[in-house]
Length: 217
Image (cartoon, rainbow, N blue to C red; front, side, top):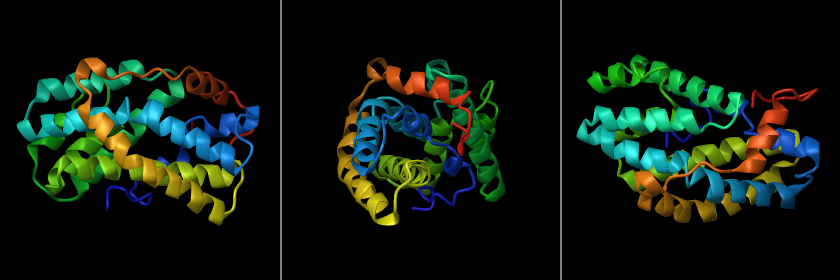
């Protein structure tokens, strides 16, 4: 639950993952559009990419398989389709490393995470933090997805903009879809992961030079 909190000091609240550009371009113009956009992103992007990485990295950290951890980190870096999406993955990963260091828990795996070149990524870092809790993998995946959902709903409230009640309805729709997304992610083998969201990538590229914006991505 702690790891899922938007108050976790990793900067997740400062990203919209191209939602702000979707609003600017007219793809998202209200509550129904925002709900559809985020539910699609959960199923077509997060479940097949970052959430699947968390599932595999969780087991790799438990086994002490540093080679597989590095492969997963390399995959995340190689599949970020825009500069700002890669910067987000690296910044949040580095921030979680610092949080893990400051907890005062002795864990040699944190040094392995911190040394990943050129930077630890958010899904891989989250997987270690979740593995440290002793929680089952399914709960770790639910935590990752719910933290993403809360941050994205807050981005929708600010950028669409929407009221709090609309935001709660969107969050309810995402919460209903998260368990199936987590199960899908857990089933994916390394060869089955994919990061292919062309419209998301296009909008993220446009967001990098958007005239006026609230979010870093």
